[in-house]
Length: 547
Image 1 (tube, helix red, strand yellow):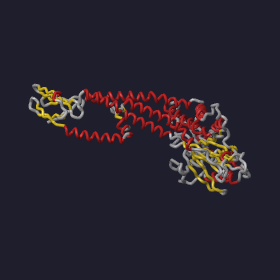
Image 2 (image 1 turned 180 degrees about the vertical axis):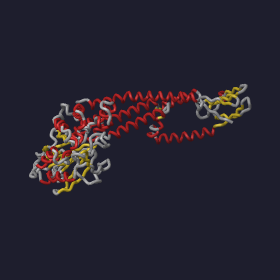
Image 3 (image 1 turned 60 degrees about the vertical axis):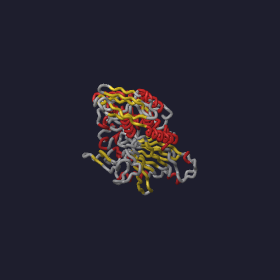
Image 4 (image 1 turned 90 degrees about the vertical axis):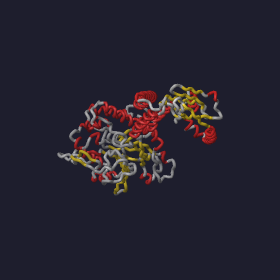
């Protein structure tokens, strides 16, 4: 015996009304929701994430021994940036003017421009310090390519823009990616001339407040001793007077010597790089080195006697304390500001320097005249991975979302009205059990003698509504149900039963459904993109256009 139950048109209309009443979350509602999610994601990834350092980072305090709460008002503020290394054709070997190189340059330059204008300048530094490697392939670029990189550098860091920030003094260090090591610049002295024309001297000093900053061209220190550039750098170092009472900060692009496998502190994100020094065969000039030699480092510390050393070159953070005859000296190696130079966590540093106008400065305050704070920039690689994952999730959700949607009342309404619905469900369950008890089954035989059981409610069924028609080879029975009062229709033709809306579609129907679903997904993606692509482009050009 078989029991078949299907819904009549009146039942479908009642279900449709119920769907509307319950607030079904259909594909269009889903599209609106995903559009808002994408807009929020883009706003954070392209703008709001660059504001995070403003709340997570601050200017460091000076002189912990001072009891004056206003001591922080008497200091200069210096923003320190390391290794921007403007990408060029030497970076990954892509041909100049190729599409992939232009694309990488755009997004790398855009990141640093946003970081500088949205994360660094809002701190309102009094001066800005670059620790070297402004370019990537600086020594090997033609004059035309070098000038092109110089124009991009000025655009990224707003050197061409006439704004209230244009008066901020900027100090530069030379790096190995700017002039090369001694083995190269001795054979191509024009690279030094080209660098000094734009960035100024490579060995010099300047004073901020009560602190003297000593800038050293570290690429020359371990070169051939008879070389002109090496001799010039050491002569500059030897001329410093030890009688100067102002504290000093040593600035060198290449870090000072430290033993192999020395821990670098909690901010280090990559493995420790040990010392490597390569020399050319014919003049023993340096072709590459990770750190200065031990002899050069000790001589620098003994001659200059700094209270702090700042360096770059390593592209990752490292803090190391040097032991000297005058006491321990801390060196901070600052990571790169670019997200394309091997560090997933770009950073910059805020430096507070004791002001020369501060009154009643003790000797102990002079020993704490400089304080530093490392600040991290947005993790751009993570943001792009986030975009990719969200795009995949969007496609999957749009593809698998039911055409009829989900009822929001089942997730939201029942959550806020849990007590009321619990009682309602309890009473409804009791009623359903009573209805089940009232149900009876009627036996109906067709023309061929096959028996069928039809559920009925004996106490509620009106016999006038029962319509039974018997044909030569079939029997049709129509009766109302006891609970839902919906028509039940069973159609038997011999031994084969024909059902309305079969559950198993044919192969052709499956293909049609897949095509329809694909078209639907494409349409919904277009709707999401129509809102968010213009938003994304607006944010790109807002930050790229000079102000």
